Length: 197
Image (cartoon, rainbow, N blue to C red; front, side, top):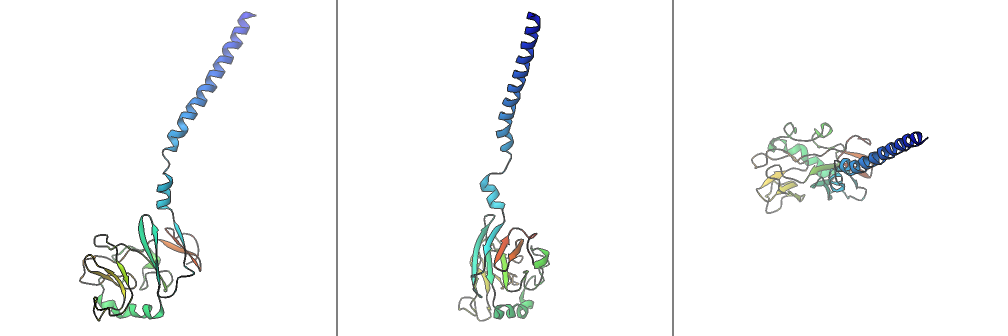
């Protein structure tokens, strides 16, 4: 009977040791595996950003941060939209053939809906921040200026669709990030797979 008791004791100790070892390995593996997940900050930097545009007045602009970059959202007026076809000969890439934008923004308006422009606020020359200059013919930009974006660092000029003018340092149009409309009042920047166009 003592041999039988010793055998049972050995089986019990072997099972208990195996279970304790397995729990220890799992406890050690959890933080190791968790370290492969991106941090909350990294997830937030890459996550799509929702923006309410319901209060954005015609002719006004708001800036949103997405992936550490400024994104400019402009509610263009009918008068602003009418200027876009008049300046085509002055543009370096009027059809956006050499510029970065989703396929749905490869049009004169560079947008899903003509009145709403969504572009990154980063000059394609050296990464400076172009300024919105929507006024017509200001003294510092000359009588031919009909509104758009101006980069004061090196003088690059973009129209109200973010298309670059010829003869300036910037090589391409402002980048259009992926985006979609969740509804008539909400824009989702960073994803173009949900919502209606």
